[in-house]
Length: 223
Length: 84
Image 1 (tube, rainbow over the protein chains, first blue to last red):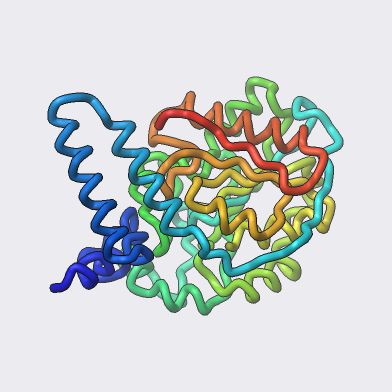
Image 2: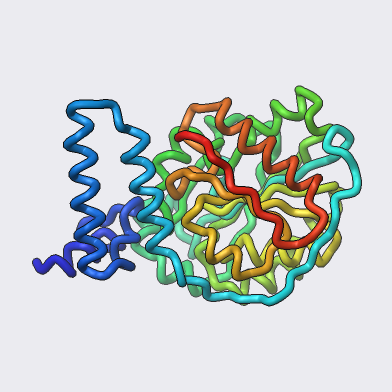
């Protein structure tokens, strides 16, 4: 196996590892430098606690790999000012992280018991399909939440959904009075989807579901 | 960039939005002229922080909600400097 094949094998290849799939975006030299510096940091961790330096190196690698990867460019964007103070506001949550309530599986491609491995294997199919919106009641316990998404490493979100779908933190902020109310319906979908179909779906079907709650603002989280 | 498209549609329909994303998405999101973006220095898949670190998640959310309220124009950015 050549080095070039090796670096690409993390992105839906033989070494599939979604935390490092970005290596495929690097030139061979860039990938070699990243791996060399990662190994240096791991070696120095044998002598000192440099956990944050390792994390920083990975974060910087991910950021560098996705530079210049913008597919949608708009010169101007809509803006709506939030009128009410947070303490009297009703807040919503919508994420593209692929969360759903266990027992209410969106069953992608009409397949039952669709696994994370299935999602990774069929990422190209997801990118051609319209997304499905999962409605998650705010009283859902985190142990009753599932996550599946073929585009990112879901291990953190499986351990604690709040890293990407912050349901418990928002409920706590509601309890503290930091916000007045968290919407009783929260939302999630798989962001790896056909973008034109997504825009149509939001305008046609999702928007009425969301605006009926008369929200003052909404938190959006991509994975 | 799915969430960017959702944000634009919601804002067009008078619903203020704030996006919480990891730094890896900074360029993709910036190119979409979005209203409010909070960038976190965390690995992809963990935009709110480390699993189980409730205090970290709360800081990120409070900073994001503050931006949701305080922003007076589009393309408002906040880059958080928090250890993972």
